Image (cartoon, helix red, strand yellow):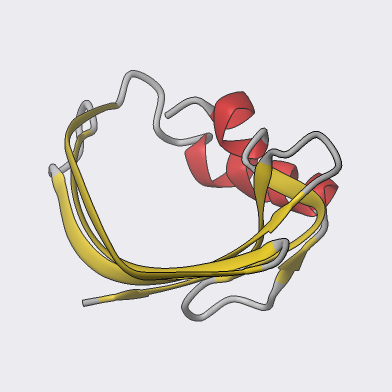
Amino acid sequence: MDNAATLALWADDGVSLLPSTPPVSGKAAIAAFLTSATGDLKGAHMDTFELECHDIDVSGDLATEWCTEHQVVVIPGKPTFDGRGKMLLVLRRNAAGEWLMIREMWNQA
């Protein structure tokens, strides 16, 4: 629920591929998407977050992994969100040695 921390994980040229939406391309667009997506979540908190990643493959400065996730978000005045999904992540190591996301694809399980 920390958009700044989430955005720090992304490369400037990252692309997020989410269900039923056009690609979200570039860090500025990802920031705008995060702001929009969390705007109606005032007072919400993540009750549960489970992430299990598999088949991490590193080739030079690129890495891939796929993950399953489960999250429970308590939203005041709304039904609790209890979602499960699958993700595919592609990361690139920058000049400082940090791994940043350049591609994310997510779907509901």
